[in-house]
Image: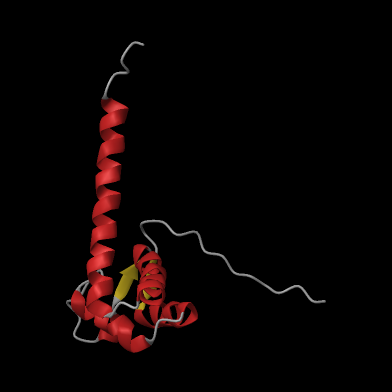
Length: 114
């Protein structure tokens, strides 16, 4: 038995991936390239800089990798189209933002004596 090689990349806020890289990740997750483009058109996936006329030059944040995997699961589990995936992704992001804000409030609130 041969051991396979696995590549890992530490994803942080500064990590960027090209459209071609995002397409590859989407295809590995089972999300067709056409649906990936629909998610960009719906605004669920936003390139960091859309000013370039050529989409092949678009760069995406590491968060888009997570969104692509989530979109694939939403499509598979709930049979959602691109618009449904976009709505679900935006609601999930809103939940994460609210949870982060709540955690920040708890961190700045003094503990009550028991």
